[in-house]
Image (cartoon, rainbow, N blue to C red; front, side, top):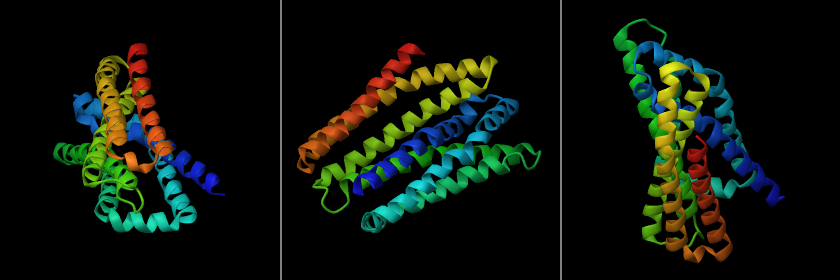
Length: 239
């Protein structure tokens, strides 16, 4: 039963990270890739069909965590309360910016909500990565020292931001044409090395700073992160 809950939790989190991660990366680069109001509108239109489809997996992950691991959910809430609240606030603001940006025709109104989308879409993956690091190092029994409890969340937050920017640029490239498409392809190619480097650094940091977590956990976490780094480098070559 524990294995089933673990598979469900991992599956829902991965689905959210990939699907909504692309939305987050697109929103974070809204004003950098979209040079005109029309281009930014095109990007938000490209994001629209995937917004709720990505978010539903986070709701599902929370449900699985609550049903299958009530003690872990309780401990994580107690240990990382500010991060959980920050995640929810960034999530709400990102959605509000996407939905409200085009409600009025004024330039200042639209520019203001575009800034909200950019800031919230950057904060959302950063907080999510830090929360994952907190779950790995702050929970009772993790065996992590004081250095690991700071370094691992920071590394994972940086890697998550870089990864979502890659996904967001790829989503933009897939759903647009012309100059916007070209800028998105260039942005994805530029973000991939950062993603690979930060994932590899996170893997090394986890293996070095959390050796007491057990050989199996240390090898598994490092292997997953290192595989992500290899995939990022391969994707850049193919791109």
